[in-house]
Amino acid sequence: MNTKIKTSLIVLAILVYSCTGQISDKYYNNGIAKYALGDYNGALKEYTSAIKYNSDYAEAFYNRGLVKGALGDSMGAISDYNKAIKIKPGFSDAYIARGNARSSFGDFQGALSDYNKVTELNTDNTMILFKRGIAKSRLHDYKGAISDFSKALENNTSNEILYNERGTARIKTGDFSGAIDDFSRVIEINPNDPEAYLRRGKAKENHSEFTEAIKDYDKAIEISPENAAACSDRGAVKIKLSDFSNALLDLNKALEINPNDLNSYNLSAFCKKELHDYMGALKDSESALGIDPENSEAIYNRAIAEYNLGNTNGACADWKKASELGNEKAMEAYNKFCR
Image (cartoon, rainbow, N blue to C red; front, side, top):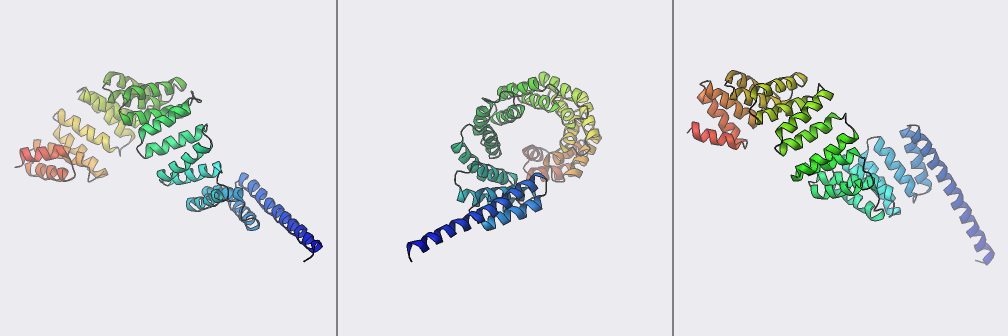
C-alpha cells in the first residue's frame, strides 16, 4: 500500500470518527434537554443512542445512570456508573452517584467505599463528608461519623442538618453534653424547629437533666401542639420524676394524636399500675398487644395487672411468654411468683 493510499485511509478514518462523535454528542445534548424537562424516558433513549455511537462515552453512561435512578432502576443506574468509572477512573460525580444509589437500598458499606474514593479525589467536598458521615452512622461507626460531620462543619458553621446529625451520633456514643451543644446550635439557627427541642430534650433526659428536658418538650409542644412524640417523651420524663398523674395526661394526649403509639400505651400501663389502676393497666396492655402481639413489655405489663386482679394463672402464663421473648424482668417475676 503506497503512502498516498495510507494517507487517504487515515483521513477517511478521522472523518468517520469525527462524524460519529458529532452524532453521539447530538444525542447526548438531546438527553440533557429532555432530562431537564422531566422527560426521563425520552432522555434514556437519547443517552442510549449516544452510547451506541460512542461506547467510551463516560458522561453518557453517567447521565443515563441518573435517568435510571430517577425512574427507580437503582441497579441499572449502578451498572451505568460502573461503566462510567471503568472508562474514566477519576470521575468523582460517578462515584458520588453510585454511592447515593447504594445508600438508597441499604448498601452503606458500598456507599462508604465510594465516598472514600471521592474524598481521595477531592478532600474539600463538604457534601461528601456529610454523606460519608451518614453512611458511617448507619454502619454504627459513630465516632467516624462525628469526625466527618465535624470536618464538614469547619466550612459550614450555620448548617443545622450537620449539627443535628452530629448531635444524634454523639447521643449514640454517650456524649450527651456534646449532643446538647449541637442541638442548642440548631435552635440558635432555627428557633422554631420543634424537632430540635425534642432532640435536645432527649439528650438532657439521657443526661439526667429531667427538669430541663421537660422545658424543651414544653417548647416543642408550644411550637407543634400535635406533636405526639413530644407529648409521649414529656410523659416518660414525668414518670422518672414519679409524677404519674401528670405523665398520664401527656400520654393520653399522645394517644389522642396517634392511637397506634405502642410505646405510649406501655408507658400508660406502667403509670396506671403505679397508681393501682390495674384494670386500666390491663386495658392499655391489651391495646399495645393489638399493635404488636409479641411485644414483651406489653405482655409483662399485662401480667402485673392480671396478678393484682387475682388472675395468677394468666399472669404466670404471660410472664413465662415474656421471658421467652427475652424480657429479664418477666423472668424474675415468673421465678418469684410462679414457682
